[in-house]
Image (cartoon, rainbow, N blue to C red; front, side, top):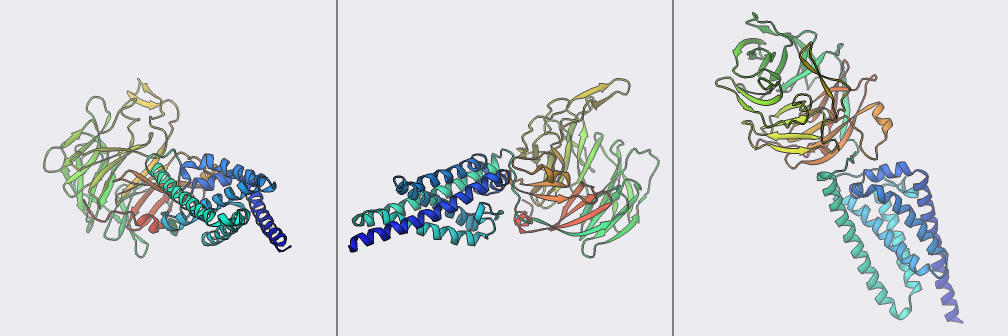
Length: 500
């Protein structure tokens, strides 16, 4: 009689455990399937599952439904309970890895657990692991309990190790072999201040000594100086000591305490000190150019034009000697002009130059003597410029004959990190967000690894036209507004601090 009661009690415990698992898996599976797109997006943000999100999103709810069926019938209950236990161990290992090894903690996902915090998830899952462990023991023969326990512990260890290996593989794929999956950790850039500049004609010209310098296309000899501490803007007039040459478009570049004014179409530029904003002419020996980055008082990096063909190249101007040209750095794909369009940067913190292509998923870094070039790719999948150009004979010019596909709208290089305002949505992203925000992708230039992405939201329906990094802040120009964002440790921990 006592043995019969004991058996019935064990069966009752197993029934309750199976019912709890059934309720959990039915709710979780149905929740995932009813909001499948959101579930897939959330998996795409997972540090462990990003690389496998597409098939994991389908597999997990199907497995949960299969386990419900196995647990519902007496004959398959034992195997169903074993696999349920294994699945909960996998879920728990996943949460533990996220909390202890991941570079960031994503938003939660998963039906009934969606409103819980990650540590609550962990405790919830552990309770179901213990229930599954008890249920399997109840179904086992008493004399074999110690063998069952050892096997369950071995299974737990194998699953945990497997999940950690999957995490490392996913990190490697996302960082270095990305198939266009972005990660958006919580709040890597926090909005702080907005300044109205009144006109949408300002551009970032440089920084130094706690100040950001703004040029103005509307008033080319005017400079506005933003004090980053008090966020006060002061405006000054620049004075050129020689103005007997016609200029097409003067551009200001500042590396405090020096500033340069150039046109690029004439063999002359102006150089001065920010203390009085007086600039004196300096003759330069080299090609015409259309972009300029200051390396130091005597040295400039420019995007030059090859003689004859007019194709883009990179040159170094030393104001005391002749220029250095490297015509093989920028790789021609179609015309050598539009297909190599992009943005040239010099990072004062690392002493490296970088060129980020506009119409393809590439960037290259090199030394200030144009040596040691390293070619890398962004996570976008457009490796060849999607452009079509035509020669307008009457004007002697090459022009686009249809709108090009812009991959990297604009970029900035600071502290060893490349920040790219991308022009293309990635996988598992909500397209609605692109209507009122710009996406910034961040890369570690030394390793070539993709790190993370974040949103910069439009202001008054005006999106980013240029942005600038200085210190631990990002400054963006949206129409006539200047916005400041505080970069959190998610980003600043990756900055290089000194030149190498």
